[in-house]
Amino acid sequence: MLLLLALVLPLARCSRQPNGESTNQGQEQSVYTYYYAWSDFDVHSPGSWLAGMIFAWPVGLLLFELISRRPASFIWLRAAQIILSVVSMYVLYLRTFLYELWYGGYIAYAAFSIYLLASLGELVLVVRTRFRNRQSPPDARHQ
Image 1 (tube, rainbow, N blue to C red):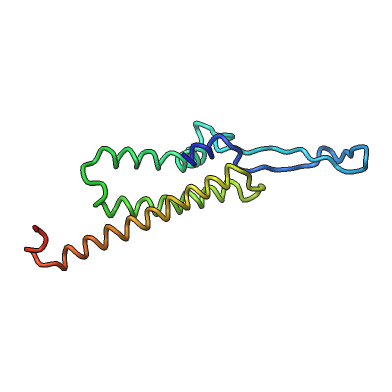
Image 2: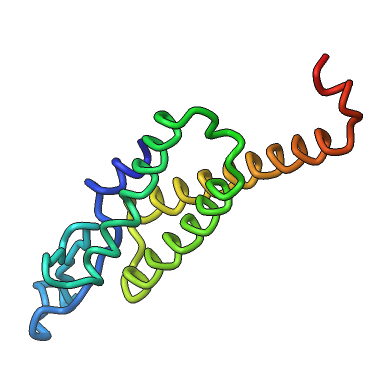
């Protein structure tokens, strides 16, 4: 839900001075340009597809988990979620580091951080469960 919110809010903003003009009080007036996740999307540019995918992959993995029979036991899925969360935060950084971070950017970072921490916790639980199952005697597993 947070990522969907980040899609519609501005990720960053850039300010510039219009032609060096000044206002009545002698102060320069800034013009702001807001950058959204979909602002510069181009069908023919692989970079813009990558920027779009950082918001779409959690939905795909969620659908996979809903469809599969035992998604909680997939270690590779948890590892992929961790890697994709880190990569998504890095791509978001690359897309916004020249600008002032804005509401959508903060929300996107928060969403990816929460997703990363949840995935790390799930990975620890899956590994711990598998380790305990291997260490317990065979008759104790079936009771």
